[in-house]
Length: 178
Image (cartoon, rainbow, N blue to C red; front, side):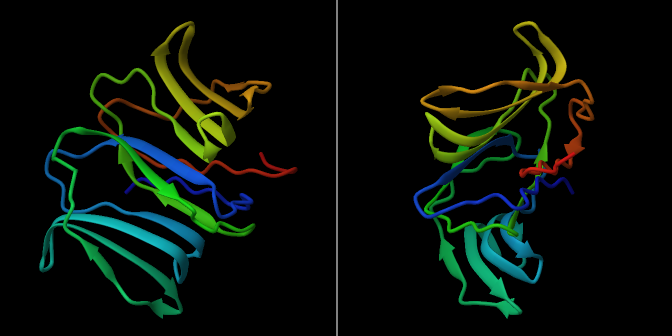
């Protein structure tokens, strides 16, 4: 399973997270988790295609030692093998020390994908953008932030992504990140 973890990101109420991805051809479920650890999750977002007794249902929950009261939503916009344009998590109270887990699979003919964290499209604390073949960038990760306009772009040619494969990404923020 692939994960994206954001650790020590100072999320505050009013900020939102946007996720874009592709659903596997034979999905059972996927999840996006935000919290300090697996046993301390402020948010568990879990679309279930056919898992246990749940079919085409989104499960939302939190975890503090144990699972809290579960919320189910039958408004299910996800389809096997198709791209979902975005999952926006709005007003998620992220705090330093919390992390985010996103599970995904790279499309067969990828161009790029992005993980954005911030208040809006014009106010992003983090823009993480692996580019397979986009503009002048090939197999390059672009990292940036946006406050009215784009800030100084950072490029990384250490590119672990492959078409059609699951990925695990752990972007870190803070003063001493490597």
